[in-house]
Amino acid sequence: MAGIGVKLNRIFEKKSVLASLVGFVYSTVATVAPIFLVILVIQLMGFVLGLNKMGYQAKELLFCTILYTFIFALLTSSPFNAVLSKYVQDAIFEERYQDILPCYYLGLALNVLLSALVGIPFSLWEHFVGGVDVFYVFISFCGYMSLMIVFYSMIYLSICKDYQRISVYFLIGMAVTFVLSVILNWLFKWEVTISMLFSLMVGFLLIAVMEFATIKRYFIKNSNRYKPVIAYFGKWWQLVVTNFLYILGLYIHNFVFWTTDMRIVVVKSFVCNQPYDMATCLAMFTNISATIIFIARIEMYFHEKYRAYSEAVIGGKRSDIENTQSRMFRQIVSELMNLVRVQFIISAVIYLLCIVLLPRFGFAGSVMHIYPCLAAGYFVLFLMYAAILFLYYFNDMTGAVLTTAAFCLVTLVGSIFATRLSEIWYGIGVVLGAFTGWSVAFLRLRWVEKNLNTHIFCKGLLLRRGIGPKPSPVVYMRDDGTQDKKQKRKQQK
Image (cartoon, rainbow, N blue to C red):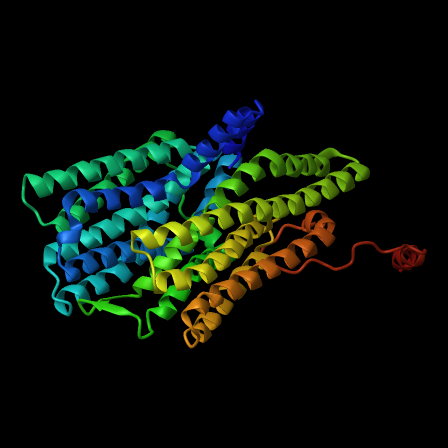
C-alpha cells in the first residue's frame, strides 16, 4: 500500500478543500472503484435492456447467478491468495523477480482446481436437476472462473502498486460488457438475461487477460522454481486460515438465513434470502468508506512511524528504539480512534439518507427492518479488519487466526440464534461476531506492545536448523586444573 501513501501525501500537502476532495476521490478509485463499476454496469444494463419486463423466474435466476458468482469466486480464492501475496512480497524484497512467475502459475493452478471442484458439480446439478439450458450454465461457469482469475491476478498488480491500472482495466471491461449486451440484445435478438450474463463473462475474461498480460510484462524471467512456493504454505499456514475465515465470516450469516422460511429456491439449485441479502449489501456500502479512510491514513501517518521504529531497531540506541516504539503504538491507537470517529459520522449520514430516500425507490418492509442492525455490525467489522492489518504489520499470525476464528464462530452461532428473533434483530449475529473479533484483535495488539522486544530480538537462532545428530548442550566448561592433572598422568603411563 506504500504507493498510495506517496501520492496521497503529495495531494494533501496543499491543505485545501479541493485537495481533500481530490485525495478522497483518488483513494476511492484506487481501492473500491472496481466494485462500484460492476454494480453500476449491471444496473445500467438492466435499465437499458428492460430487465423489469422479464418474467420473475428469469430475473431471479440471473440475480442468483451473479450473486453466487461473486461469493464463491471470493471464497475459493481466499485460502491461497494471502500466502501467495506474502511469497511475492518477499521475492520482490529479496530481488528474486524470476521467482514470481512460478508463484503466479502455481497459484493459478491451485485456484482453478479448487474453483472447478466447487463449480462443476453445482453446474451439473443446475442443468440436470434444475433444468437450466446448457448454454446458460456454461457461460455462468465461465464467468465464475473468469472472475476468480480476476480476483487472483489483482493481488500481483496490487503488490506492484498498480492500483490505477486495475481500475482502468475494470473500466474497459465493464464498458465492453455494456456495449456487447446492447449489441446482442438489439441486433442479434438474444434474451435479456442471456445477453447480460454472456457480456459479463466476456468483460471478466477481458479484465483477466489484461491483468495477465501486465504481469507477464512486469516479470519476464521464469526460474521454474515451484518447491519454495509450496513450502510457504507450510510455513505461513496461519495466513491460509486467517484469510479464509475472514471471507467466510463475511457471508456465513447469509448462509444461515438461506436456511430459514424466508429463503427462495430458484430452479432447485440456487438458494437466497432477498430481504436479508439486500440489507447486507446496503450495510456493507454504508460502511465501505472505512476501507478508504484507513488506507489513506495508514499510508500517510502510521507507515512513517513504523519505518522509524524499524530503522531504530537496525542501528539505533536503546532510547531511540523505546521512543520510536512508543510513538508507533500511540499512532496505532490514534488511527483506530480517528477511524471510529470519522466513520461513525459518515455511516450516520448515509444511514439517515437510506432511511429517508430508499423507501421511495421500493426498498421498504423487511429490508429496512433488517438494515439498521447489519449496518452497526459492518461498522464494527471494518474496524476489526483494520486491527487485523496492524497484527500483520507485527507478524502476529496467531493473533490474526484467533481474531478471525472468534469472528466467524460467534457470527455463526449468533446468526443461528437471531433466526428466532424479530426482523430488527436479524443482524445481531454480525454485531456480536464483529465485536468479539475486534476485542480479540485489540487485546492481541496490547499483548504485542508488551512483548514486542521479545518478538523482535529473541526470534533468532544460534545454530542453523537441520537433520542430524543433536549438538552437545555444553557451551562452556571451566578448567580448574583437573584436566591438566589427567593429561600428565596419561603422559607418565
